Image 1 (tube, rainbow, N blue to C red):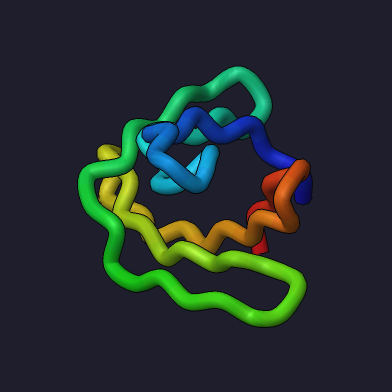
Image 2: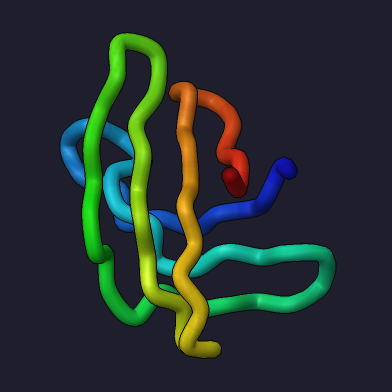
Length: 66
């Protein structure tokens, strides 16, 4: 599922998710629980301000909720 993500932009561009929007609902990221990389993607496991855990995948241009 594609999702809109607002990030902290560091020296690598879109570096760390700060909030995500699913449909019309904005969820702020309380904390990043884990992050890892594969050759094609960067992954984040985040805790939202709604208490839910979300896993995000970024391919350099598009974010997805997985």
